Length: 272
Length: 213
Image (cartoon, rainbow over all chains, first blue to last red; front, side, top):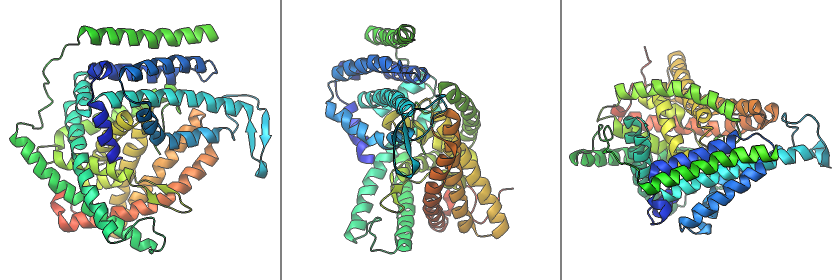
């Protein structure tokens, strides 16, 4: 995941019309799409909303000049737990329906219901929309810009400071993790190696994590002392300089709000 | 254990957000009171550490794996359950907004599960067990196990109320899975606490042998 963070930051540092938008605009737009997708009723008309938001996403992703492979790679990393919950839906009677039509009966009395398959597909559409816009947001906005935008939108400065420090330390951890992994590999240790006693593996992992934490903390203390000497202190985010939105930002904000609000209402009215 | 977006209806998600915001406000008050220049690196490193620990997949059985939660460790090291709420909120914000792990509308529920329930269960069960049995490391291990299993059960109850997962299979699946992960989390929390108490006892808000008054 730490390598992924570095690659996300590389993608976010590129140049495009989407990258150039203010972080606040992208933050508001992404949250608006996600809230609209989640708030939409669990009905099949969500397919139309999914199509609309999907098309909107494709336009934005194309404008960001990022490769579709970048999206797919990130999407596949996010997928497992949500996909697992979605797939399991088809085997259960869902409280959102009153009657159920079995479409396949499997061994051990497991039944697949048409309504449950429909519900799973509705969840899948919503889940896809939400994940896609998070990938878009983080792939086009460096973390520090995102934090600055969040601060200007009212996130408390102590949170922004801690988040900023946390992200910096993640990169410290990444370097530490590489060194610790190399040290473990050099000693032929792998936590999934079934030939090693389980207690030994857990004890080694515990010591490794404790040492990992302590070494990172000490490195973090030194890093923070250096940052303090460069005027980066606890009050650094208390008063960020004002950053008015440009005309491009405002038009992006207004047009995306229109797409989200008008699109959701239109889907509901036209298909209900 | 991270509930993804769309798995809770928006009405329920708002309720969880409101509850989470109450605890978040208390955690923020704790942070403003406790976080001086000297403590900020600790909180940030703990948050980054828990983030990294959650990225470590641990072996369970039959090729499956799971990750740690870290709420108990955060609460014990910082000497307050609000420390865990604060730190897990930081972790969930980065996971949700950068990685899409968890979600935005469901973040309130995830903060309640891992930060509030994990932090409070971890901290107070650690305090209670330590007062009863005396061993801080065994207490930390059991507390971490509880702080792993109970939030997982809470997540299955929330998914049941949302109508996105049946109660009994959810409790069995999440409970069993996290009961196993919890053993690993307990062992690693105990060992990590032992290492910190031995090598850098100044980091701990309360000495490992002390009980909160």
